[in-house]
Length: 188
Image (cartoon, rainbow, N blue to C red):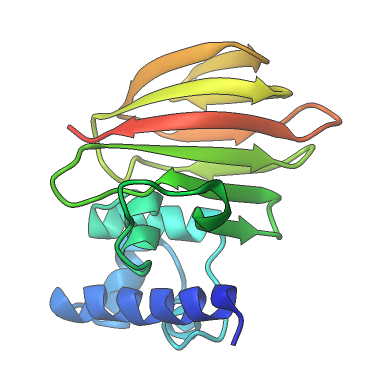
């Protein structure tokens, strides 16, 4: 079994565990996430992998960042995490790739992720998984239009945007090359 397949299987199991621990039915979770009952069932059975957007909505329901959800299915990370060992999650449907540079650990509030968005990629999150989450987005390559609530920021290589997340977000790569940025997340 490929490592990616194993991670997806563990993610499916973990999502089912989180729902069961809250004693929510699939219908309960569907109403909280605006994801159809059948899609949720297929995700939990490992028949399909959630897109970045769906994983974001599930994170909101379970009060976890996407990184936290993914970290829960990874082995405990060592203090030193070599580049070749950093977990990577891809959503080929949306052109979203996320490398967990420093996966979250119990007792620690900050984490660093590297994100790549394909040209024309467009990802929306209706609400933050963790309200008040502090974020520092540093553009490494390319360009990004980031809309937080109703304010749009046009970011270029080298720019850094610091913000607390209380509202919806929209990540859009208007360029012809991939956008690559480092995101530091600090839980409140």
